Length: 228
Ligand code: CA
Image (cartoon, rainbow, N blue to C red; front, top):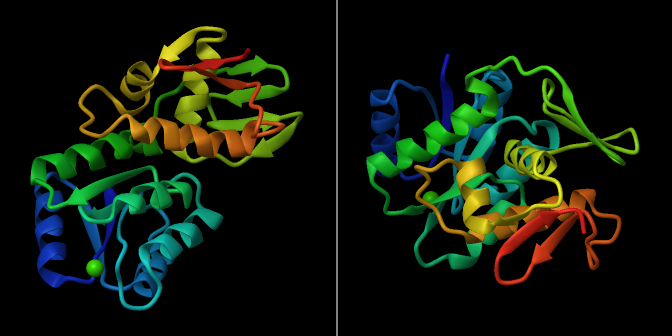
């Protein structure tokens, strides 16, 4: 079942989203408050993607995102942000969201984003045996997990995908556009900034010293490289 949760307190926006996602073949669960959304997810643990509005009565969308991520790294999370709230995008991504959509958005844009995350969140299972091993990291491709010195590091699906791109291309300078294409897909509508924000978050998890990253190094004016 292609299950998606939509959290939005404004009824007209919510029904616009719900109608369009249902039309695209999704099984949509609706929530009008953050508390409500968390309950729905407990009752529907097979939900693959969650769309979270930010401004809500009660706990806000960032807090909902944080609480979901505390127990669930696998679900795809898209924040619904307002045009005037530029900083929200970065904050949302730093709290563990995978993507954001700026209101007002078109039905096509919305479904493209959900489709992309749904594919990555394991909606389409592929059997890919094996692992990528580059000391001190082991990326298990089958379980989509990462270990550093034998210790599990919790990654979101996007962070996992970025790690995989890096570990499959050791020592190669990758432009931000290339990373965007490989991780988010060629049909992605978003901005390059999303690459930087996700890499900043990934560095916090994997680097020995975030101030002086040695695993994911910056290639100035171009992009990033795995290894020095
Ligand atoms: Ca709202």
